[in-house]
View 1 (cartoon, helix red, strand yellow):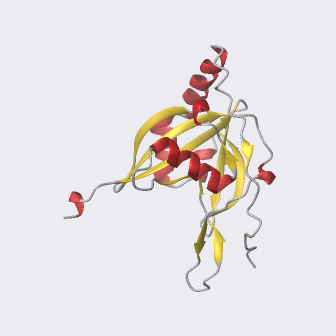
View 2: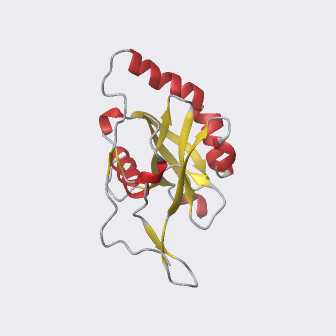
Length: 178
């Protein structure tokens, strides 16, 4: 019966810079880091979901036309990823913030889904992620190949390649975790 259930779709953005680094978000309460990504709402297109999740989890408002569509990737037995990629200058991660919240079991506290951000060298990034995400990054995407593709688009004169994001300010009424 389990095999008859459809796979869930999660959409996200790989954000890389010219220094061969990948932007990752630390998952609150866990030891691993992850891409800004999450589930698509019913009827939501993958690009819209990836842009929304990136904005909610990092505060970065990216323009869809700057992203490279990497398509769908096998991720977990019950989940598929639809990924996009952005080439951007190395920004200060201290300016990033997560608006998405969850309720911590036991305490009932509302915590951000992501509690830290960092740029990680391509060689080190997969080791910071879950095994499933590491497999996607290493075996399906290939971060060095990805940067070469994005740089090739930039070299061809496509001005819409560089993702120069706007930072969405933190919500004024956002509760501060104790």
